[in-house]
Image (cartoon, rainbow, N blue to C red):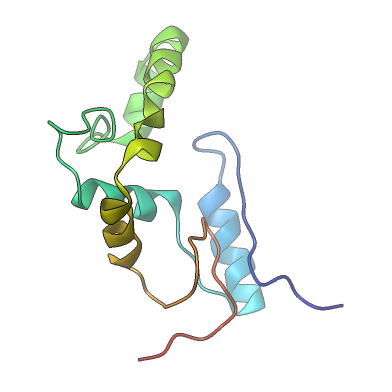
Length: 119
């Protein structure tokens, strides 16, 4: 059976998605790209003034954030996150090129295309 070219791993925060992705990637000889990497790329081409909710978590310890906030606050924060889809395509194109450890079409989350990168 042929291996999939991209494997996406999803789930709630802090349940071990990245840990599982790294172990699976090592076993399958894949690379990884986490949602944190993608989020940082998008934050690099925006500002807190232009997209405040995208920068909401900048500089905050994620474990502290999820443990110390009420469920209601976490829900409110999550409802404000769709701003990422409102980025102009020029900014999204720039984000796709930032910090990418390999070249491939599209964006992968906690996964990578099996195609090897070109130097």
